[in-house]
Length: 90
Image: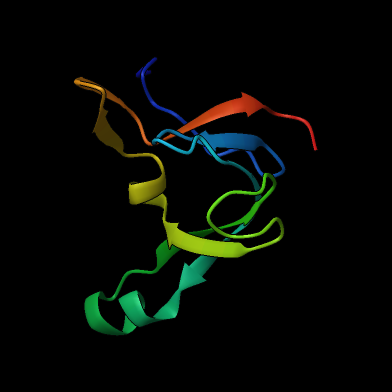
């Protein structure tokens, strides 16, 4: 088993690693039917809600692919997880 493999925790609190470090709660993972129509495979989309005021208000709902949510980005010269789990409780 790959120890580096991450999973998304429904109800988990995540910090988006960027200059704002805004926090979000993952609400659910849904199927992307558009992907299935084009490729024959269902994709997965993460739906999450902003918990800390930032550029947008608390309660703003976002969606992005699982691959992007679990992806990495350059931040302050280091490759880091784009979203980092900070609390796995609701």
